[in-house]
Length: 329
Image (cartoon, rainbow, N blue to C red):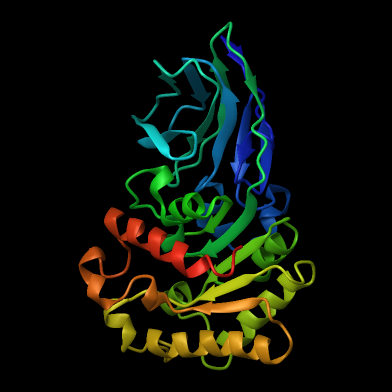
């Protein structure tokens, strides 16, 4: 079999790629700066390749993917021509390859979505000996979304069915997903990462991790998010930014956390942040209410009272598509 070239043109959705011996490790931060993400490099989640996919065109009827042995159970999705989910591959701990066979011999776009849950060190992707491949050239605009575990989507049905992946497909966007489980704390190093990444659209989900972590109070919550956006605006001066507030959060709606915040109050303050930017000349920042994405009537889709199930993530993907479409043209 013949290998395709794995690099930034065939591995999409990553912020950076680290070469480790015979492997390539995708990161969702600039890995050279990883030690500045104190205290714990985003608790390891910057290495989870949520939204990252190997993308190329080929007429090969067979594809083989090789990677470092999985440390736990792991899933991949194989998607053909953007919308046809050909196969969800579920592998056991220790496995290090899989094969997709009986594909069309016509030229087609292949996307291999990596796990949104566990790190993946890529080794090789092979096509049949006599087949051809090429880099997929696309005019899709690049969208970066930042959020919590609700954006990383551990409980999505499979890697291509997270809400950001669904939204990206529906709006025909090139996705970069910066959903970090428990770690959406609006730290300046993430603001710098977004600032230094070429993108056409940005969305930011605010509140749920700061509620859970008791990180910012009434004095600091708006200040830290405003500063975060100001850092992004140093380079992305007119890129549309959508700032969204938390989806429905069961008891968190009215129960103050240790620093006295409720989700109801957080939504009010998130909207005020957008109003402040608008009133001071920024016409390219917009507000989306999280309750319009997943509200109280869908509480049954939150099995733990916080994280959506697979059906909830599908709903969020569809609702975010509708909410973002007016701003992401």
